Amino acid sequence: MFFNENLPIYIQIMNMVKKRIVIKELKEGEKLPSVRELSTELKVNPNTIQRSYQELEREDLVFTQRGMGTFVTEDIDVIDNLKKTMALGLVDSFIKDMESLGFSIGEISEIINNRAKEG
View 1 (cartoon, helix red, strand yellow):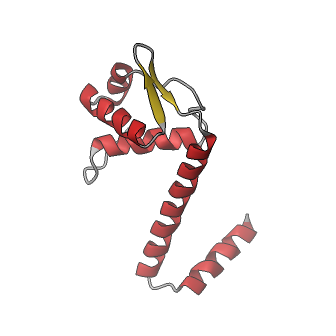
View 2 (cartoon, rainbow, N blue to C red):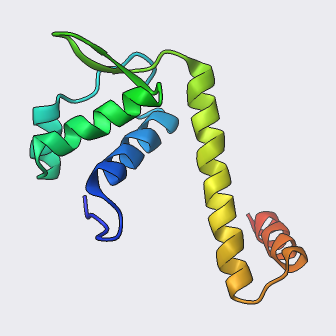
């Protein structure tokens, strides 16, 4: 994984885990890699992984069972809300970027509609 210098690594790791949850690469109730495993895989300090997991737990996306590990939430509503939130973030970013290029909302909609028809 390549890290962006402009965003804290723990947030980038959180975003990676969130995406894996949303696309069902990590399923409801599935155990996450241990802190040690993921820190080795990503070549980051275990404290960074631990912080990511703690923040994900604060967001109710994962839960920890002492001695067992950290698991993806089993609450499908939480996952669905995350997916919608991530989608809105992408759309907002896209619109902002398109507007910075001088496109109006109407033009943006037309481009999207035409592209969607092309398949």
